[in-house]
Amino acid sequence: NAGVTQTPKFQVLKTGQSMTLQCAQDMNHNSMYWYRQDPGMGLRLIYYSASEGTTDKGEVPNGYNVSRLNKREFSLRLESAAPSQTSVYFCASQRQDYEQYFGPGTRLTVT
Amino acid sequence: AQKVTQAQTEISVVEKEDVTLDCVYETRDTTYYLFWYKQPPSGELVFLIRRNSFDEQNEISGRYSWNFQKSTSSFNFTITASQVVDSAVYFCALSEAISGGSYIPTFGRGTSLIVHP
Image (cartoon, rainbow over all chains, first blue to last red; front, side):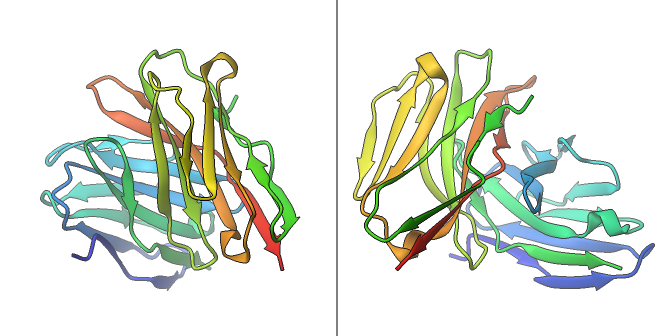
């Protein structure tokens, strides 16, 4: 039982490059989330998916797109990376009692 | 204004001291959920506790205890006899319902706890 997995663990991009962060969960949860964590800012919600087939913006969606590929997988795409998107990205899935399980994170640096 | 305020950015204690991490939240909903998560230096986020708005009973789990007071909109976390392994960033979070019935969490900015041997 792997829980929530994220790939890659680390990534360095140049400004303007694109990439997709992958997330998968094996707990059969309906809801999945993408957050970014910056020093002193806590976790800020980028996008979420309340169920398969739906996605919605969170607090900081600009510059990102998401795809809920199926119930297991929820990917985050940066179409044209900017230095302001340097951050640690966490994916999470949520149980019905609203407890969240987090992936190990992706440390992204945009130069 | 922040919905979840963790006013203590960093706390430093010596092992075996008791320490309380404060969390103040803001909501107009009558039904909501409060959480604490721990992020040790390794970086993963670990769930510690969930409380719903109708259950103000305090909870104790080993050296950890939580005090939920609706009257002051606070959900404070106390570690008794702290240990070096308690060193981590602790996040408080509030989940409220949005249109469509989903509960979306808002996290505080975290309190970094450093426990010195």
